[in-house]
Image (cartoon, rainbow, N blue to C red; front, side, top):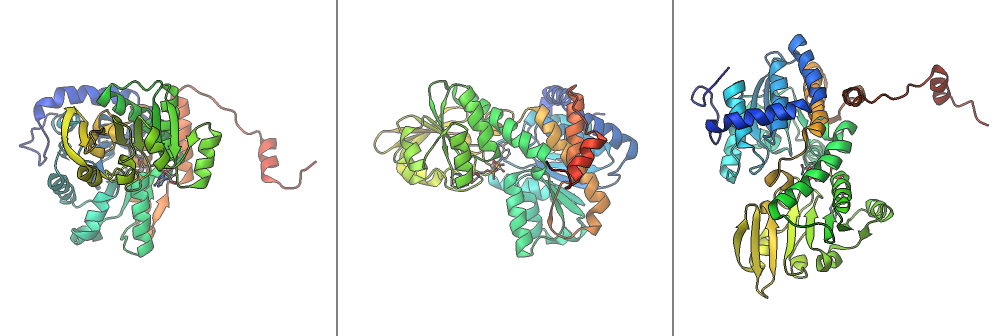
Length: 425
Ligand SMILES: NC(=O)c1ccc[n+]([C@@H]2O[C@H](COP(=O)([O-])OP(=O)(O)OC[C@H]3O[C@@H](n4cnc5c(N)ncnc54)[C@H](O)[C@@H]3O)[C@@H](O)[C@H]2O)c1
């Protein structure tokens, strides 16, 4: 199959990039063994036959394999980007040319284009929404209420999106059920921890070529992403400092052997800072005022609000681009602060996002959650639901199998023992 942008309603950078995109999609596919199994089942059983899906996700090689899997399951899929800087333009081109899947996404698009692409995704009149950060769902519930009635349900990929959707459900404004893919064990324990951990380090290094060994690396937030990032920074020889607001998480970081302190203290010490909190203004004016000359600041949380960039602009005499993905801010006292990737998730802005091996499990969850929604959506309330436990366990089982790892099974005696209360000493 070969489709041109003229034949398909889409908006991508250039169809000429498709050859490289195809290679990347194939490369990622090799590591997505669970998704391959699901795709085979989907081809046979067509569980998504005729279902319109609008997916608002990072347009990467791994996402391309998800889109192909959904399409092969019978769905009519349209893809738009969940972040203006995360699109791999060559992948978008191959999806259009080789798969005939409409894509609305261009790396570096401005805010207006970003939202016009989401609107184009919604023009598809989705029955299932697949979101990463809840921008698509929010737009649907505010400016595109006209098509809300046709939606069966949706899925959400990330922590920040799940938090927003739970807030919508609590206020009674969410109109349809959503499965929180992020909350599956086979998602956040691996994607957020190992995926974000490794790819964030990759993004920071690709952007700066900075030597982590011997540096002081400050991680804001010791959640799933923060844990992964801290362990990978330590593995690269950095002295890692954690900042937190949750006493239990802070205590865990202390017992994992990290230094824990307030950001006001850490600001004076850090060479590299990375926020992964899902919160806003975690690095703010009072912290920039304390930072060392040459401090590098970055974010890997979902939105570009974790670093107060307007405050940094106000403190600065000027800024200039010094490398791809690096802006140098010169403060009034002459100190320089380097902002990476415009404060957007640095693992996607300056690197390639999570490795396919972990996205395999995240997108296996997405595919099976979409199937679950098609089967059960009409019976569910307009709430945020967990991925059913049997789906989560099955993905773990398939992943282990694909890695050639065998585990023990409970004997009948052990099962009985675990289910009874009568046996003691
Ligand atoms: N870069 C990526 O590819 C990627 C992947 C997965 C998730 N995410 C995003 O990363 C963010 C974190 O996700 P997570 O799964 O680790 O969430 P999480 O809820 O497990 O962890 C967030 C942590 O940040 C802490 N925190 C909140 N405000 C803080 C503050 N002001 N200072 C210090 N700590 C603070 C919280 O107490 C919590 O422990 C979210 O925005 C999520 O959507 C990004």
